[in-house]
Image (cartoon, rainbow, N blue to C red):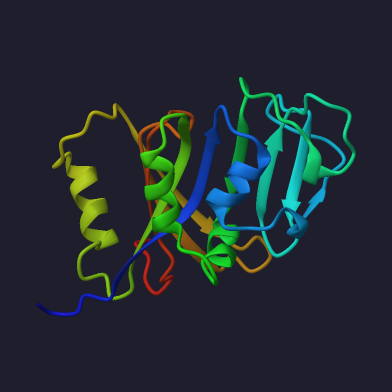
Amino acid sequence: MKDTNLVVTIDWLEFTVLNAQMANVMELLGLDIAEFSQLSKGRYGYQSQIKWKNGNIFIMFTPTNDEEDIKNVKVNLKSGVHVIISGQGCRQYSVKNDLIALMRELHARDRVNFTRIDLAIDDFESEIINYDRIHKAAIAGEFTSRWSKWDEVNSRQTSTNEYLGRTMYFGSQASDLFCRIYDKTCGTQEE
């Protein structure tokens, strides 16, 4: 089979582990609680939040005790522990840990809700995902989709008017599922 220069990576991972204490979540992640620092406030309805010192991993929870030391905090089991591994966090985490193995482990558990999974599919040679071909097919209506709309955005640098790229969105960005295709080659653009 011909090498297509196609690379698929996890570009964002967000999930909630219910009925688990912080130690359980740290074990799942393969990280040490000592590698995290307390942030001043929580988010998404959780009272507390910690951040990984080595990258962009955020863990939100609601404590049930007044313990200041995050190593000894007890977590509200009903609301669970919410984990965000951002795009940059995925790359930082993957240096020493396996995201696919983490997802398999999480999927095997009973009380885990995945709230966001972004996949980046990079086709460096435009052999499989050819933006121009997809764009022309979309304009001609030559595709079938459950989504009722698609949008396109062309980006330019304000000061120089330099063309930066173009993006197509299939489905609403506010929905639970949508597809974003973007072309960063900036080599050609239809005028």
